[in-house]
Image (cartoon, one colour):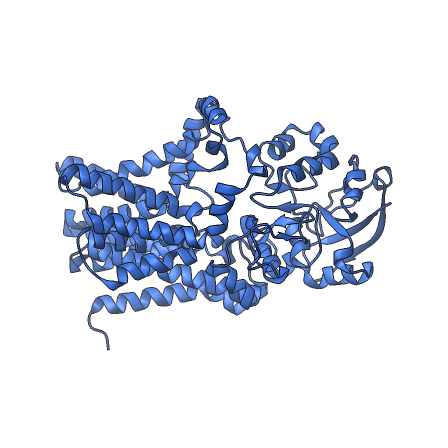
Length: 555
């Protein structure tokens, strides 16, 4: 049945991944998953888009459910696979299937990359299977899909082509990956890296590898087709949007240096690698052995990746250095496009380096092999402990978060077609109301009309004036177009057992009414509601909801 021992190891790894994923399918809506940039945004976006009737909308189409007409192009392309999962399946089935696709292909890609290009000898089979398994269990950002976890598979294909290995699988990978990943969330940086590799090859060999550059151009072209809405918005959209007021260059040098080391050791929330405890010691000890044994030439790939890893963290941190400010004022696209995301290459680099580091330990002597095995197994167990069901235990379940029954009660109480009135939320993510079909004037989106941002600001300008932190957060970014208040700050998840109260909020609700706003869903009581022209209609609570909703009507 099994051709060799490695087949058994692969089967065991696939079983581990299946067990890791099982809470999503067993618990369904009662599972705990990431809230930040997930439940509070992307999952609701997919559902809003699916029922909007604008999945294939024109370039100038809008989605009226959000901010009286959010541009269709603010959402993902209809050619993105994750969009179709949420359009076809219930939320948790779509989420579970997406997780399974990403993790299994992450394993396959890293395994093939290590086996064919980095750890070729059969004696390293434990390392390449174990490292591939560890890589597949990293707590990646869910809506990123294969944007970072698909890089090993893409690199495997490009290295094959670079070596002249002609396989139909190479072009199949480059053709399909763009449909389940994002160019701005990973592959722009990967492809530009491949471009640099091609240039280096040309300079070294004095020959242009036409197959390699053609493959690079081909994958870029496929991405342009898949992300045609993004391309159109970037090239032809003239209306100013919220990203035009995104200002990143503001950190003094000492904070930049601190951020560089923080990113190097702890990673980033969107590309978590959980590498500090076991992987970093392996990398530094492998570096020590290389220097001690004078094997710099033999291990030049490891050394290159080791220093590139640190360099990417430095680049990430220095992108926010205040010294960039004069340049960003001249070249506006440096603010609107996040070039700091070159650090999204780090998961690939860290885990390939981990495999090479373990190989160096393995080959040092037989006495080191148990230590290498222990460190590899420890990393897998550590990542298993980072399962969503464990680390998000104190967060609401999916069912508690979206609280569909509770919001159905609110909808029935208001007893009007949802398209006839607009709502906003205080102390709650607007995505909750959006997921439940309400038309919201607040939102969390990466870009929306700048004119709307300024219009919305007049509603909360008094509260922004009281609090520098939220004023800077809104004015210099504004992705979260929320009902910010001084007393709540940047907190927007007040559960039903919270004792928090708004005592002295000052809102300007005239513009809110002109925009169609009639109701506020508040997660906390507003003690001076009357001063703001608000009347408490009713308080809603449910056993299956994480929230107690205070329904206020604007007078």
